[in-house]
Image 1 (cartoon, rainbow, N blue to C red):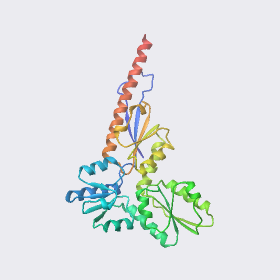
Image 2 (cartoon, rainbow, N blue to C red; image 1 turned 90 degrees about the vertical axis):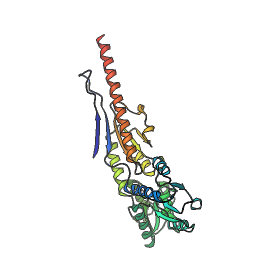
Image 3 (cartoon, rainbow, N blue to C red; image 1 turned 120 degrees about the vertical axis):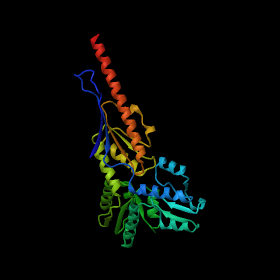
Image 4 (cartoon, rainbow, N blue to C red; image 1 turned 90 degrees about the horizontal axis):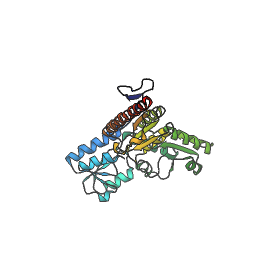
Length: 318
């Protein structure tokens, strides 16, 4: 399902010409997921009662982080730099090793880890316990992937067919993924692994979270109907980048922007169908502001179109 916003001119200067109308379509699923909302709520509630430091970025969205700082929340990358008595683990999770190291600094640890990331950790432990060699499909160095892999004696992290080609043979592979990877990518790379090692047992456990799947599917539906798509989200947000890549497969013009200030009127024409989607760490307020600006661009395009038609008619009268 896609939600339509259509802006049409109130009059037509020439009834023999079709009136240009810029449509604005909103994806059925977009914006913040429950895991991010819960993490922000926990950080906000805690900061009201005691000083709080978050280890790493709470979410990959600068607008959210700026608001947290305004409320007095501090951010550090390493526990030895923390000066508050309480620290919070981000929604992306952390390894047991990292959490225990933080506690050894005498710090109280709050976990804002998304429940679906916790589920991914549990699935990975189960695969290893059953004797599978772990293969994690995800972005090497991403905080969630570090949290998944730091407790493992060995593992492989892959994100391309070239990565699969570089693996050595094992009798049993257990495959799971970073929760924000597109499920199509996960299935494709798993199939590549099976083709690379046909004698091996390859077991896939689907750990892509439901909000990611919903937003990916909605983005495909949206992009197929549009001439331009705006993808809202932080520059470092993996799921937002993946949304932009997905949209680009179905729409010729895709713009990944963090806020409404990055929008440019020259990106749009009066007859465009403009799609809007957003990553899982994008606040509702940003989505609403971008919608407002798009509506304003649409009104401007309609006015320009009316003016051009009127000018054309005057020339014809001459």
